Image 1 (cartoon, rainbow over the protein chains, first blue to last red):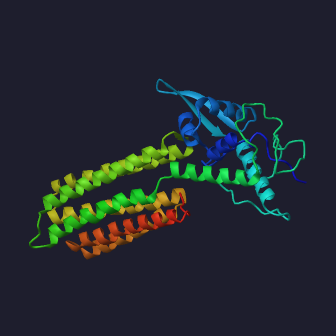
Image 2 (cartoon, rainbow over the protein chains, first blue to last red; image 1 turned 120 degrees about the horizontal axis):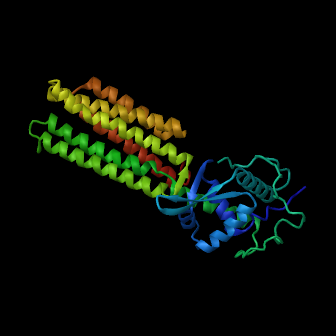
Image 3 (cartoon, one colour; image 1 turned 180 degrees about the vertical axis):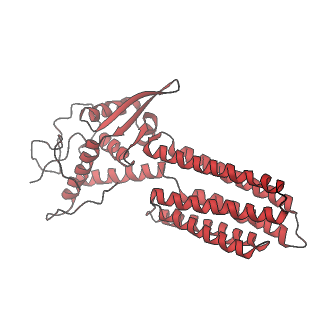
Length: 108
Length: 237
């Protein structure tokens, strides 16, 4: 049975967000500005897509303060990492001829 | 590979995989349809981009410290071993100090740029490791005064201040390698430990030459290997 790719991740912007966040070790998070600079996107665009990912439970967005400066941190959740892994696994299945079942190379 | 479709990871319709219509996308998607090849390319590109942006590079750090050791220990070696050295020990020490400060500056700058905006587990781990270096070297830099007060000769001072900091560096590289599962760093640390032991056995003045050539040279070699590996695209964190 071939399922389709997760529509929450299957968009260029959100795919790049999830790729970036899951490239970090578990337990690491990025500040909003750093994430934005790694994606070359506008704050508004990033916020919109983060909201969608947050609604799906794939990322957590924490608003806090560093000293007196407000700071926002973004982190991939466990569910988000798993969904991304599934997404990449499914993608690999689509790219390789049938008789799949091979594990993907993603282990970070 | 986990395959746990518990989340809403699958769409309900089973259309052809190559053309995803993403009917649920109600957000302002700026996206053209994605085919699997393009998706794979995006993932690979973005991964490479993140790595090159946040990776702490061995070639930069070991390059800077390798130059400092090679030239600094080298200058001291020349000053201590040559009858007609073009400069004295004082000049050599000043040069060495300036080189070490410069390497420290490069390290601080590189780490700041690369880890900017990264918080959480690895940041805490990195900070603890950084403090380990700081506190240990606070102790190392307190040694000369203690030695002087104890009446140590210049040779004793030079010996201790060559062997002890180098051993600390070797040990911390090995520990860092163990922490991050980084064989390159571990191997360099082990190499520095062995080189320092050899230097201690050689004794003054040529222990300084051993540290310059084998110690500094080993760091530069490690930096060079890392640079080549990166150019081939197989660079590891």
